Length: 243
Image (cartoon, rainbow, N blue to C red; front, side, top):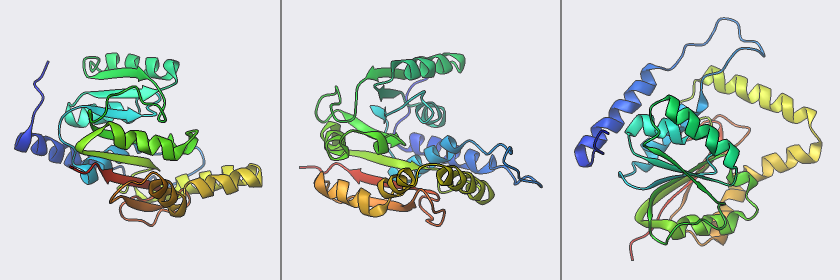
């Protein structure tokens, strides 16, 4: 097992990871169709997590982790262990299988739980990331309060959803086109709900009701690609205050 790096060495590793992601940015295909595969969005979300949170090494949680689509790239970019927390045992089992195939089984862990009742002690977590699941929590305010509770003083959280600010522009436009097409085929009330829960106004209300101090919201929601800090999507970031 490689030792966990700290301090300036860790920052060098993270910076190298960002450079690697930039170098891997694909060029747009000549002819884009509905069947054109789009770049992996999770790698770009991870890049933003590292860029905007600059987390210190320690206990990291991927909340609503699913199959570890964020957790595994986080491990690959930093070598820091990550614990998935999700009520879906089957999905996390798949994530652990993927980690074994990548020889990362010693750095990925799984805990069954939900955002509103996280089975973790107070002041125990250095980083909580959550991409995509907040929209489906039973109680977003309670979930955010739980995230704040488990963070150590100085611990950071980034919660929301999106493609990543560095996601290729052509791919973001195509992703948005497909999303709009899919939403237009759904019930109008479903589309209205989709837009509402991904709005800055809704995120601000959740954060204020949870009494989060000094939070920041980036992005304009699930139907815009204009925000330079989020691209298509919306994110809530905050740091637990020292007493």
